[in-house]
Amino acid sequence: MGRDDDGGEEYLFKVVIIGDSAVGKSNLLSRYARNEFNPHSKATIGVEFQTQSMEIDGKEIKAQIWDTAGQERFRAVTSAYYRGAVGALVVYDISRRTTFDSVARWLQELETHSDSTIARILVGNKCDLENIREVPVEEGKELAEEQGLFFMETSALDSTNVKTAFEIVIKEIYANVSRKVLNSDSHKAELSQNRVSLTTNGEAKQTSTRFSCC
Image (cartoon, rainbow, N blue to C red; front, side):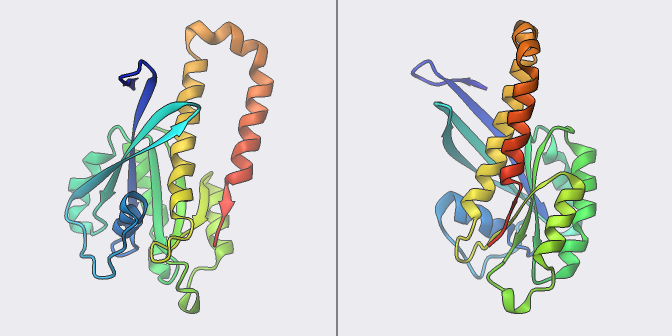
């Protein structure tokens, strides 16, 4: 976190995209960052990242989004890049059940290498492939509820929910950071008077956006 040229606050958040190979992680990022889709994209080697900006509460928020390779042989390399991450998109392909079955392993890896307060969303990508769907929407929702994740189905091909999925994570990161500031020593007295209302509002906001699909 720093300050911009006008003296206002700005934030830089690291977000990782994880999941099996060929679930569409790179195309989700390119659709969000550049509004591009490459049907012939090749497997990511190692790690690539893009930086995107948005404004929340009058503050400039920059998200440095890392696209990690999904192949097993690169996992030792990419695991180092979880360090410092405050948000994650865990992606599976709705047309390949094996990628959904791998979600538990990716969540375990995320838990091992990141802070427990990391903002997480489960993303069922390729919802344009409804005719060959192998993972029902309900299963994605149930897993997300069990693991305490936000949930959304997306399509990098036709842009469905892509921007929304990334923004849910970024906004949740900002909310987490704001809560940490409120819990600092200088704000404890004020927080003690408003604890109930703050908690209630936070839970209501999260519940309203947790489950969405195309």
